[in-house]
Length: 92
Image (cartoon, rainbow, N blue to C red; front, side):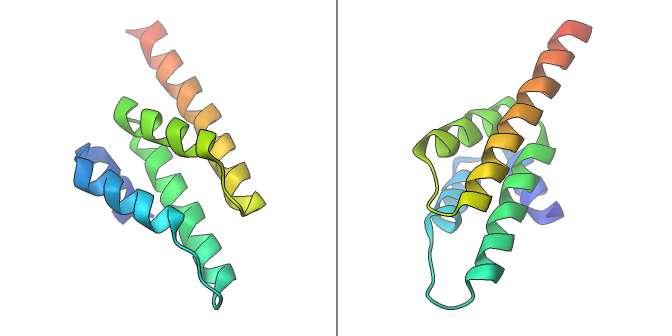
């Protein structure tokens, strides 16, 4: 997850293209492993705490996921990031 957090913190379009590709991928085999990786990507994006990452997460959350667990993780992540970003604005 730390790798995904580091990538998200860069704010580079290539990093978000990579995330988008990975989150859109599917597999007939290893669905559980792929689900865990997608949840780790989402958590890494959330942990980055950047506004660019938040906008990306909002976009993928609104697009929806076939997998309910991944969709729920994206929704929770959006709420957590919104709370963090709102708290930072209040303090600053």
